[in-house]
Length: 259
Length: 374
Image (cartoon, rainbow over all chains, first blue to last red; front, side, top):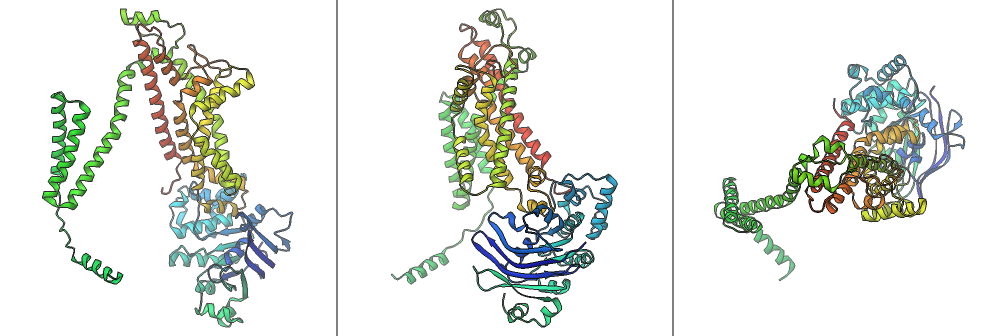
């Protein structure tokens, strides 16, 4: 199910502003890839181009190709809605739908698309998704309560359950722990480790320890100065990036000399 | 003196300030003075002074006395506090007096007639000055009611809502979800703002003229009135719906889109339900705003004395027009009281409808509100 993603010569623009230039990278299936780098270097922007969420901002567009399993996500006959169904996303702030219960939140991807589902199949999907997000034990007795009544960490895991309920091939996470306390963060990191058994996971993080803990490969993004486009400096196995980076900029950043 | 020296002197001044020690101030004197002011006003009134003069005079005396008493007892800071309090209470009373007085007048003059089933369930068809004279001179029961006007109000306002709510909602969705910036959006917003300020009589004339062009000069019917009310209602609906859609967090739209939900489904299934309470409340208030319109309906719908439930066929009556009509043209000019009673009762019903609409707006808002705890 998990797919490889090949990014070639990707240039990303917001109207006239050139946000990211010449990114070429390969994201391996069934692994965790971390994007690190200083604020404004375009790592979230690159992440959002992987499921075409980038283009919902008016005036935003990309040049270059993003291939998933050999199929270009930006070709003319690709439906962005279909791309987003196959590439799930978890955001920085937990965002369960406030009008829906926990159960409805998990089923949102199907229900919002008016997919018919028998009661037993729905129950099964809710349980497997919540178990997949390590949330089942905590909420199994209150599935009909509003999702927004949960704690922040639980809400974030609910959002992960919601994302995996549509059975995507890739899961993107945009700083999923930056609004959470250390214990919830640990729960999410454990979960990421389990998710990579089945999915390709890409995570943006500001926390370098987190990148070192959870990821197999790490991409370091940087920008030369404000106003200039961000670029991919170095991408390698996480072990190498954090012990023996090839570029001085990477070493400076991870050792805290700038950024 | 150099600026530095100036600065230093100012600092010295500040350091030289002795802070007032804080003393607990009681409210007793304030209450006693307020009671005295009320008594003084009553005494002045009984002594033959004009009511307004008595009230204003004793109020001013009250403010001055509050200031003086607290200045002597507690110092300037507390005196300023209590004086401001006295002024605020005064303005509150000034604001509330006309409201209470209006409500009281309408209830006292029209309440009894309005709850009479005969009044609620008969029209004015066949009611003439003869009947009114009989009511006044021989004590015969008041006949002729507002049934046709109630029906007309419901039909015309309902049609206006049917026209305005979809148009207003779609415009708001367009402005928020599809084209929130750019020349077209600015132009639409500008026009909506201009429409908000249109005098209601102009809306009535517009509908009247439109109907003259479409169906012949002088055509008056319920649909025409509904169009006139829509002209007044649409900008209100657009503005309130736009505000409500705008406060739906962007994260929810992104969450739905990231699940592979098309944009139109995101709007229909996530954005609109999340904003439902605000939208419903906005629509209800917009209805309450136009339900009492008189002038446009007088122009576009006309007046009739009988029941007309077909908005496509000739004049209808509505509560506000009914009240105006009976006040201006009593059935029997020699005995106007029965007609005035009916007009007051119609006014009472109209206020009741507006109050109920406002209450239901609150209930709707509470019912649809997203639940955060459970």
